[in-house]
Length: 143
Image (cartoon, rainbow, N blue to C red; front, side, top):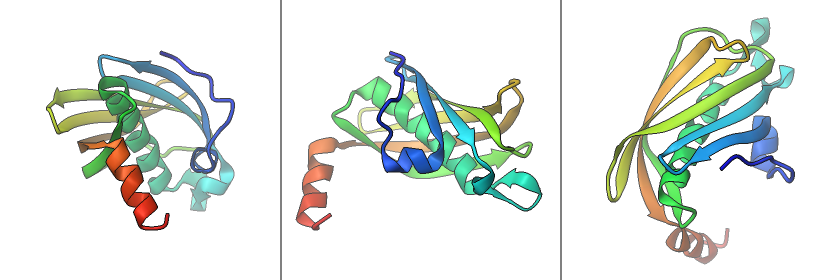
């Protein structure tokens, strides 16, 4: 299911989300981001935390596509390798499931520029947490 993003949550505004291109039930997601100059450090290179966040979000969306919206994907482990600098402009984050378990899954992802050059790749072990339990715990904590 592809989805245009009309109302963007503050987190996704900060991250520069343009739209969710694809969320496939097979466990694949594609998101587009606009890398902004204010996300860059010296030399006009996007700070690595944004690159990591974009890949992490794509893998989380892949988990939601696979498991449904009753799941909150929680990263247990996350690794990102950087190959080329991300610069201001459109970037595409892709995430997909490599191994699906009952409570956890192993996901991979990558970030590409608008010409298809792979800028970074990531892997994550994701816990499929129960959304109701997470939301109730947040309410109990006053969040």
